[in-house]
Image 1 (tube, rainbow, N blue to C red):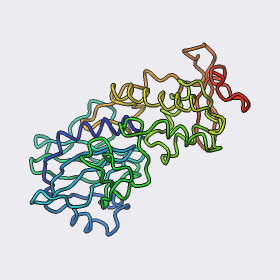
Image 2: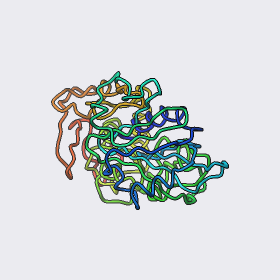
Image 3: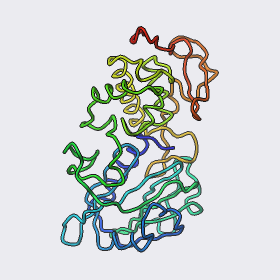
Image 4: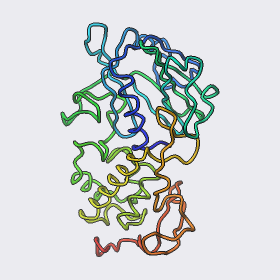
Length: 318
């Protein structure tokens, strides 16, 4: 599933191609891709009719476009997108009128898995390609964010789609309050990896980057939040932010055909992973063989020497 770095790569690819463009048509090939849209395709067509995209925004793993009407006034709604497990938003130029561009990365068949297309006034199409159809597109009303800061990267103001109102800020958001997030982590008894994945404390982190952050911070996945010191909780959050920044710099992490950027290129951070997917290989820090265990339905990769349980009586033993 695309995580924060992958979704941010997609946003950055879409922003210059979509912001300022008018939506001319909505082409729906598979109505299942609109299952989040109340009222179905007719409701979405109505929300998009005559609108222009004025901003491409991301918070966590959610993307949205701000919409303005023909007079330039904000419509009060956002066009939301979520990539789910296998979704891609791919740019198709007028020169590629019959099909999306040939992939420079391991993309699934774009004709077979194209579910929806947005046709823009310059002839460009934005294709939503989704092999498993867990992603989707839908319109969501805007509402003021609680803290008054910009709603996400690329947002002009604090207006947040209602569909993302319960989503915490992510670690690449300048408005994220890391000390407050660390304090919140320490109030919960669940394992720290589960807390990182919960999205209500901090958003955008999935299985890959949680494992990488915990390896960087020398903390086991099942360490209770209540066993963390403030210093260690902050170290975990900072490690997660740093590893996602590194992933973002190389286009994210692609293991298979299910993640490519807006131009069909794959990311290369898989070559730099220290923990995730490396079970049976030596830890690059101490040489101990890395392990993988199933915990609460998810695989967790860790070093049994570097990432020992935190003693409850001594909360900050490295």
